Amino acid sequence: MSEFDDLRDQLRYGTRLLWKDLGDPWGHIAVRLPQTDKRKGFMLKHVRVPPPPADPEAVMIFDYDGNVLEGGRMKPWEIPIYSHVFKTRPDVQSCIHTHPHVATALSMAGKTVFAITHQSVQFEHGVPVFPGDMINTEELGAGLAETMGKFPAILLKGHGAVTIGANVGHAVQNTLNLEQAARQQIWAATLGTPETLEDRFINFHKNPPPGEGGLALWYTNMYYDGYQKRPVAKKRAPVKAKKKKRR
Image (cartoon, rainbow, N blue to C red; front, side, top):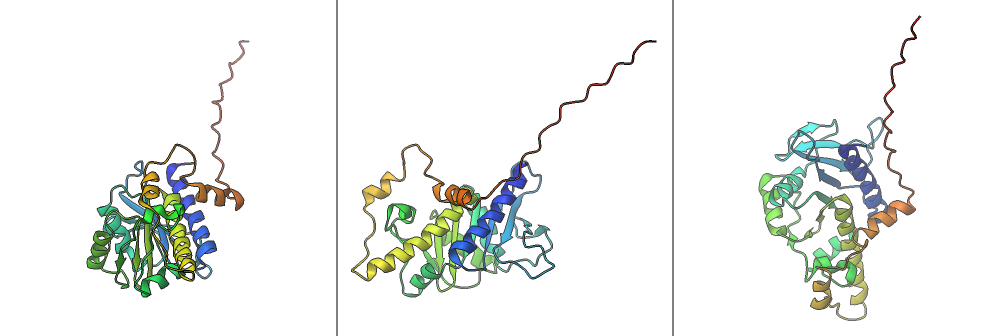
């Protein structure tokens, strides 16, 4: 399987996982094209499934200015999210825009999502909040990327969230952990005042011990969902030419 095909399959699985856990059909996942691809830009997959006969597995490709390079589906309104995040954050390989119900509700109460458990340490003392406009202009896209800064996520007030990651799995995990942290904050608020995790725990996770916990949520879901990557075609051994028998 080529690197391009592998990334495309990750987008397809990622959208399934977001739908399963968030129950919201809107939003998209994007990932940078591999370095081996001559085009410079990113591919994007919708979470929602279009009506027939459109292909529910369709993937679109854009350059970093938001121009469509490949794909027949209607261009999403909020492409400036991805083009500006990718241009502003060279360390980011994948970017997601979704509408998590609980995290979005927190934003309307003047709150944000912070590190309430070890699973949410990446959000530290709170992710930034941006106005809830549809991010459909270059100005709004640039403003969102600037406000997001080095954070792994940003809330759009009354609208949704944008999360990033070093790969598709990492970005998906950040999205799901954002919503989980929001739920836990509300649960804690029914008993008292939710507290941010102690700094010593936050700092511990900035240099975690070696292990396979970094993408545990992603790979565990893949396993229990029965996700199978397409088998890599085996190279056939070269056929040796038969020697002609002398008569």
